[in-house]
Length: 254
Ligand code: HEC
Ligand code: HEC
Ligand code: HEC
Image 1 (cartoon, rainbow, N blue to C red):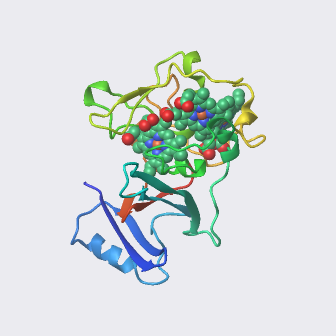
Image 2 (image 1 turned 90 degrees about the horizontal axis):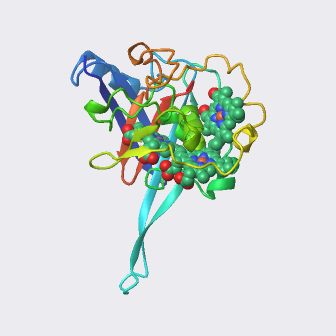
């Protein structure tokens, strides 16, 4: 059955918004759509079938014209650093996702890391999309299957292994047609055995925290779960666009 994403964003002005969102396996005008309307009643959980906490992340920018009316006129993006807010669904208080790496660690080499048109900068925000079940299926050509995992740990470990990789690591990215972005020639300016160059002390140690989902990586030597049975934690709602900002929400155990 086709999945419809019902969502609504109410702008209260002054940067305050109320977001109602839910993915339903049904069509508009149905009983399920009515259920979405009921969601907007006070004290109804954000997503009825979900447990624990959610995190809502915001991305946004505005275009600013510098030196307008002169020959040096230029349009630049004024980007806001992604803000994240944990929201309780069934938890008594919101529980933020665990933190594994720090912004400062990444920026010790990257200066100011900014991906996807510069408006995704917070490395705690990346994991909301770059979760255990997600991959490049939206961009990968049908004759280049299977998909490649974009799980944050798989992707970042592989990117920085670069020329030492023993298999191809290519992600089809944004663009028309989607470009094949290959990372097999990255040279890492450090020693990858120094885990704490990126990690908060001991977060690289096994066992993994309880409840962490296995990466779905059909191109890897070890792939614990076929994608069809693993869709427990895909992005629960796509992006809601409003003005020049958008909001993404996703479950936490990625
Ligand atoms: C020791 C230095 C170093 C550290 C620490 C580091 N990186 Fe990198 N990273 C590089 C180099 C070098 C490249 C390849 C050149 C490039 O694309 O900038 C790279 C590439 C990348 C890319 C691909 C860039 C692109 O344009 O496609 C991403 C994404 C990335 N790093 C994210 C991270 C994140 C997230 C962290 C922290 C968890 C991190 N890096 C920590 C050195 C580092
Ligand atoms: C709102 C969802 C979303 C967020 C947030 C996000 N990404 Fe992505 N990213 C994707 C998707 C989806 C792909 C796979 C290609 C596709 O489907 O367009 C991707 C691909 C990539 C790629 C490989 C292709 C390319 O364009 O270079 C890199 C590197 C990357 N992301 C890094 C990051 C980093 C680092 C962050 C956080 C600073 C981040 N992404 C935040 C959704 C997201
Ligand atoms: C270039 C940066 C970088 C280096 C160096 C690095 N990691 Fe990671 N690692 C990451 C990122 C990014 C994640 C995903 C973070 C997240 O999910 O919030 C991750 C996640 C992990 C996880 C999963 C943790 C969890 O709670 O889900 C393990 C285990 C891990 N790394 C092991 C290692 C080990 C072992 C080393 C050293 C031999 C290492 N990493 C070096 C960037 C790095």
